Length: 180
Image (tube, rainbow, N blue to C red; front, side, top):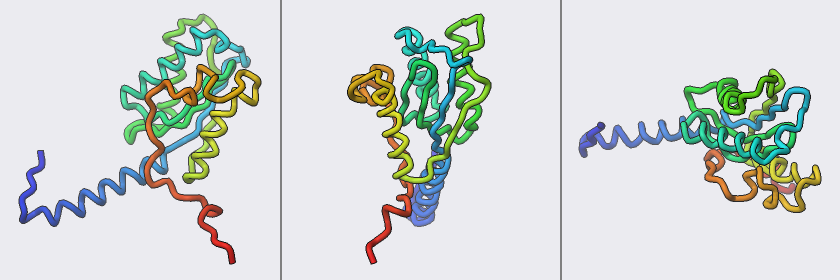
C-alpha cells in the first residue's frame, strides 16, 4: 500500500501519470487482429455446440486476464479476434491459450487447428475500426446472416461482456489531414 502525504503528493502525481501513459502505450502497441483456421479447413464450427465451446474458451481466458478481448467472430472453419495480450503474455502464448484450450476441451482424436495463426498489429483507431467492421461483416459476406447482430457466434450480437478498444489508439494519418 502506498501512503501519500501532502509533502510527497506532488512527486507521486507525475509518476502515476507516467505509469498510466505507459500502460496505455503498451496496450496500444499490443492489440492484434488474429485469425486461426481449422485443420484441413474442416467446418467444425457449423455445429452450435462446437462454436459455443470456442466462445466459452475465448471468454474463459479473458476472465483469467490472459488478454483483453475486444471483438470476435467464429466462422465455420476459422475465427477472427481483436485481442490485447496481458503484459506478461506473448501474442503466441495468447493464441496457444485459445487454440490449445479449445482442443483440450473438445477432446478430439484428430488435429483441430492448422499449426500457425495469422496476426496483424493494430496501428491506430481507424485500423481498429476497420478490423472490427471486418469481424462484424464476415458472416454477412459469407451468407450466414442478413445483419451482423443476427449471427450468434459473433461479438456483434452484443450478448458478451468484452473489453473496450485500448485508449490512446492514434488516429490514422488520413483522419488528421486537413484540406489545403
